[in-house]
Length: 167
Image (tube, rainbow, N blue to C red):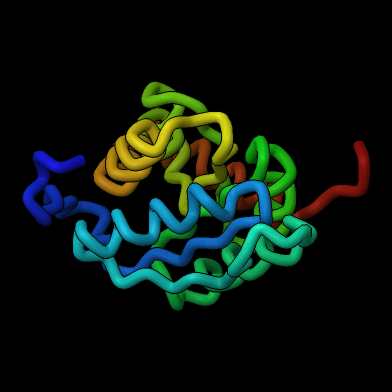
């Protein structure tokens, strides 16, 4: 993370300037590390909480992250809890959100290149600070490939619009 000299690689296809970030108590330490790192990289960061390690419910903060992205206040969102699973489930309930739970650089790249994910969920305690920073940087810099993937993204969005009840 020190080799970046405060600069971030430009992502000309997917312009990302504003990132919202949130966590529950389990993800709070990781969130604080990532906030500082994103600031160094030059992103405008909106922190929606939590603001301590006091016990809270992750759905409250996952919804805040998802709504900031869906509403256009931020281009991308990051939500961190103990494992990232529950937050991914919550974020994906918000119309327009394609949240991806990622756990390594391969899933990070895939979530952007193929799925055009706009929210990243992470299990903060599962990764070292350096791993978290690298994962977030790669996720923010990775471009959506478009092409054949648009057909699939359109199907995801159609499923969201139709919301069939338990077929």
